[in-house]
Structure formats: C-alpha cells, structure tokens
Length: 330
Ligand code: PBG
Image (tube, rainbow, N blue to C red; front, side):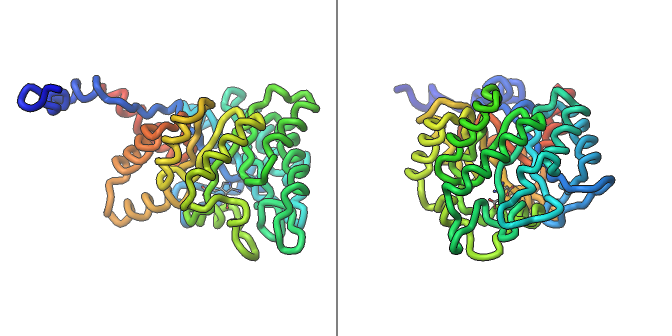
C-alpha cells in the first residue's frame, strides 16, 4: 500500500470542479417526497406552530399546493388526514368520502402526474389515538388488520398511487395485499413503514395531526430505539408479505439501520426525515445557531449516503428550490 507523500488525498479536494467530479452522493429533487396534512372544509390554511412553513390544508388548498410541489419537480406527496369526527373504530379512515379520499381525487385531477402516496393508519381517526382497535386497553392486532386493509382499499379506489401502512401491526402488509388484489388493485404498490421506532421525534407531527394517544404510549407496537436485530426482522417480514418499498423511520438517529437494511435487502428503501428532525433544524436556524440551508442539505445527504433511495421530508419544497438554484449556478 503506497502512503504519504505519494498519496495525498487532498489532491482531489483542491478546487470546486474536482470536488464536484468526485462527489459520491448527490441529492436530487427526484429523491424527495413531500408530506401534507389535509383537513375538511374549504379555504383553510392553518400553520403548525412546531413546524414553521408547514400547514394543515383543506382539500382545495391541498390541490393548489400539490400543483406547486409538482412545478418544483418533486415527484410525490404523502397525505395525512385530520377527520371531522373520531370514533373507537376510526371509521372516517375508510369512509369513501373521507378527507384523504377527497384530497386524493382533488390532487389527481389538478396534477395527474404527481404521485399520491397515502399514509394508512388509524391513529388520527380513533378517539383514543392509538393505531388500531383497542380491546381491554390493548391494541388488538388481528382486529385492526381488517380496518387497515379497508382503509388502503378506499385510498386505492379514490386514486392513490401507493399505499403506506404506518401502524406496525403484524401481518398488515399481507392483509392489505390480499384485499387490494381481490379488488383488482394488484398493480398498487405497498410502501411499508417496516421499521418504525417508538420515537420522541414524532412530537410535532402529533400536534399537527392531533393524533397523540389518549392513554399509554405506542411501545407495544413500535420498535424500541435500542434494537437493531428486531428492525431487520421487521423488514424481512414485510418483504415476505409483499412490501414493494421498505421504510425506516425516523431517519437521522437511525442511519446505521438504513445502512444495514440497504446492505442486507434489495427492495427500494425509503427513509422518513420526521417532524421532530425538521423542528430541530428550524428552531436552531431561527436562533441563528445553525445555517439552515447547509444543515438541511447535510442531513438529507447523510440520509442518502446511508442508503436511502427516497426521503420523505418536510424540507422537500425548500430543498427543491435550493437544488434548482445550484444547477443554474453551474
Ligand atoms: C401515524 C404516523 C406518525 C407519523 C407518521 N405516521 C406518528 C406516530 O406514529 O405517532 C410521524 C411522522 C412525523 O413525525 O413526521 N401512525
């Protein structure tokens, strides 16, 4: 092995064109998915205090926003709904005229080429705020499966391009796949939140989506942040049940998991740069404590370098703008 002084690693870092040519990871706008919160009624736009720049949007506003997202070159959005009413069974999650179902139709008619992914879960729709049916203060796995499958089917019927279950029930990918296939939606892919950790970084999302559990927490279904082997088993299971795309969530505190899943499995890999990760950057930037653009691009590049093919991020719109500026400068 040759060493110094023959070897000088700084040679390829000497100037900007050299650095650009040997850059190993390039973030592209085509990697990004923009999450959106949709609410009932018309002409509503509510800023979420802990997520500056992100709004809850009524269906008509969501369609407008989707047009802007598409103009920026972002290929996909993921929708979260806040229903008018919640009940024990989360029934507005699978109502054919539910808020997400109406938003899918509105977005698809405004921007047919923008991919619409839907989050499939019950927590925004249940009165108790858990991701499934509660029996004796426990989330009942098998009773929940049918409702999740119904929800996914109603999204596909409304025109969703991809369904994304985020509940962490065992067997939900299989249940959703069967239900979709029986209804002739065998062409709709499933993006499974395969390894979703019980994370403190969902705090701002729960404020945004009014989905905090009313008792207890989500540790009986989401993963312990201390565990790695269990995440690999979750991913393996979801692939076996027919998941087309695998997701790790959150992203930044779990880069090691992203890397190991990338090295172990072949399906496309997504990472969710979640609400708390977004809030940390925004809060520090507002104080002048980090440079917002640099910090954001560094974080997203690191997530891609770890192995993610696509990144769900609230930063998507601003990043699309920055990347477009940079390509004009070159
Ligand atoms: C619903 C769901 C959550 C997120 C995505 N889908 C919250 C939770 O599990 O409590 C979090 C997203 C974010 O924090 O940005 N199950």
